[in-house]
Length: 239
Image 1 (cartoon, rainbow, N blue to C red):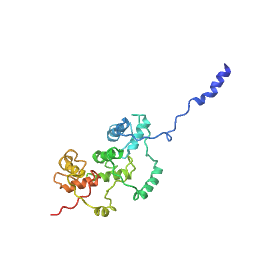
Image 2: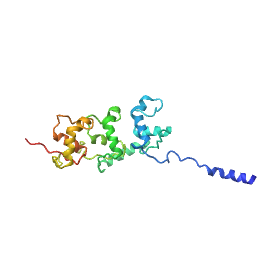
Image 3: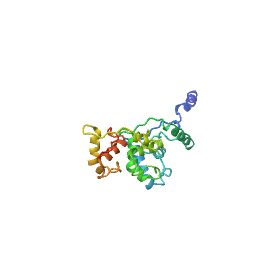
């Protein structure tokens, strides 16, 4: 019996292995169908303001990953360690490298099933108002591309450099793009018609530059700038 107990004692350390370290844990950034996503959104929008003592590390300058990380550390809402979070000593170097590669990066304007789309919509609808210090480059006059560009520059939500974004270096190229006014059999025509008749009333914050007095060309241009409905740059109307 004594020999058997000694044998079990020698094997005991091998039975319970230590937990995987935090740095080795598999990461996952929350998506809209998960409890963690809504908890993180709540913390970013309200929680940090209503309960500052509970989450002192989450401020107006915090990123989505900062908020999710705070919940993950607290074991809340089944949150996992978020991806795309870099230490300060690394982020500066990574940011410089990304800027250097930015001009050659392939562009992509986000679409509804992507995290970047929902993040861009949130920034256009709420984020720029609730967190103006975090995104000073996004205002009521900003386009969808401006908002996505702001997220891309910060490495947020998997956003890529948006297409048709009119930066100072791109304006001349955009002005030279071939124009086309939408006609009834095209998706752009119906998208523009919807925007003129319903969109500006139901979702005015989506297209702040469009008002009831805006001409058709302005509405089509707003869709073109956002890469919607296959719209092309509208041609000037000749009188």
